[in-house]
Amino acid sequence: MIKPLADRVLIEPKAAETKTASGIFIPDTVKEKPQQGTVIAAGPGIKDEPMEVKKGDVVLFGKYAGTEVTVDDKTYLIVKQSDILAIL
Image 1 (tube, one colour):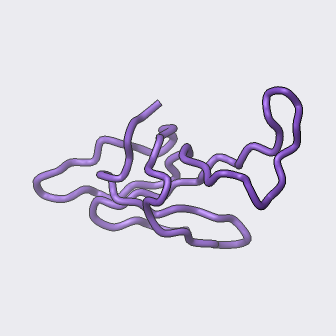
Image 2 (cartoon, helix red, strand yellow):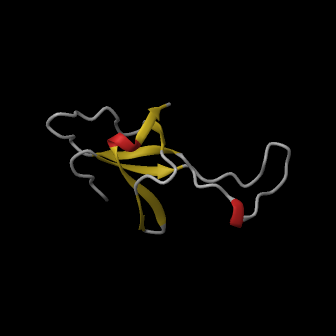
């Protein structure tokens, strides 16, 4: 398993929507990148900034934040704690 260091957080992004509220299917070419996900692991934090998120939190993050990592055919996102916008 991946263990984030310092103020990094490992997030499993929520799956992109495949259908609109009115029932129209969205093709893969126009799907938006998800901005919500579940925290899988969090680093220990840094000296001046303790970690505010913990495993299991559902968070919102910036659209272009972090680095995508694929492990065992699952895609995760590693972001800095400062890239997390809110805890839901």
